Image (cartoon, rainbow, N blue to C red):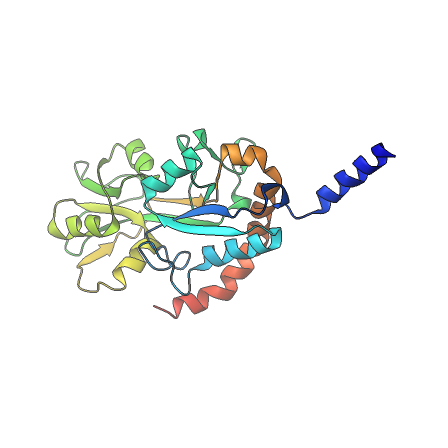
Length: 261
């Protein structure tokens, strides 16, 4: 009889919400403090009233999986450090690099990031001053000695290094655009949507984007490896629900977010 009860208990545990074993402690998820419209809206430590498609997507996925959330905004380097230490258990909208994969658990397929489980696909572009003669042909800059600004901790730094482009990192979007406007850097490598969100409220900046992309990449919600080891059902459920809801939600919500500009 005791063996029967154990089997019943095991079945009941499998049927219970995924988060019961963790006593429903909220999943701590870090989000960059830089806006990335329409995926993350508003800057600083607060979320906008309309927080962005990625935030809405995660909240829907968490509700599907019966996982309570604690969302927080942090600077890029801090959220990476906190993911590595386990202070946060996941980071929303983070691209894959070999360095990050040492401590972050990504969805993989045949050893490579599985784009089917992405949160979004974003592209990096070069911004230059409005009067700049600098050109980008998709492979190299017209001036090999050009100094390019980027943000500390961004994955695009690896892409720039592979192309032997000189990089000067800054701490924020505002500081890099200020350096670009002042002529202290020749170009700024930045996600096009992050740039659009920043420049929308700063129409006096005399800058423009070069037409060809630097790189386009998938962005995921990777987890701390220790958490993923102990809560694999939570990880897989969230990734699967994000993938199932992503395209429909973007199609529905994108027009409303674009109308906010």
